[in-house]
Image (cartoon, rainbow, N blue to C red; front, side, top):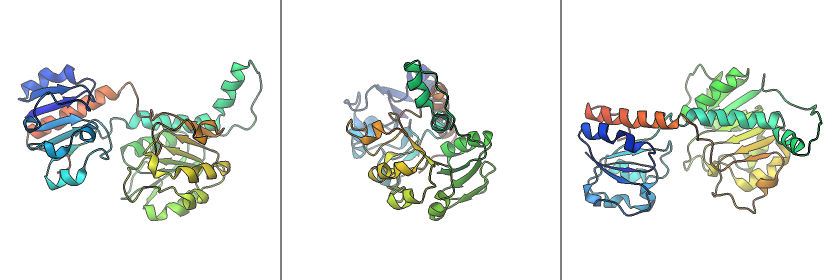
Length: 306
């Protein structure tokens, strides 16, 4: 297969020899917005992230295989992919571990008042905090029970939390005490101490956390969004924040977050620059996923979307 590989796969060059032994012909494009090093017609498969944001997929007349380095499919024209029966894979499971650790870190940062201790340290101020909270015994709702959500569930379980799930396709899973459909979200929000968003952005989930649902959240609850920014109505969230224990926001409706946003200065908001997916094990996991999918294709198997 004629493979166009982009710099989105950081370790790609370490595997060129292996790919060539499998019979693939390789062209490499470091930056996806730049001109291709080959003709569009030459390309039969791509390993990329946002390539189709800069190059119209229709130009790739012979495209039959896509491997994404991201977990989401929102940067790909999926309707076109499905209409043309192009095999597509995402990086499922690659970033789940660091994202789950990040969600836990954010909640603990708020519960243990990390900002206050840091501020006091810079002022050489010895001042005890008497209102720290425990995770033990808290009820945690994971909205989106895929790979990322389930890794989150495992970690909150280890801290003695009761973990319930909300998913588009509820199922039985030992990591959750129960799992319900999205239609039950409003009722569940009112009883949970922590709500973690890990679901994909679709028409159905856009502004899923709107003014009405945010108002249903338990007073003092923590909201964590490590999914997509548009799942939460930003203006409604800002208005709701005084009633919440805090928010951990790694994603936003507009990125980068505007310097004028009120979120930067809100005491009970943790704001990070779409960074939760970063971890030192990502490279090995991503390469393993990419290579396994190509080996499966060689054997005539597929676990991707057609």
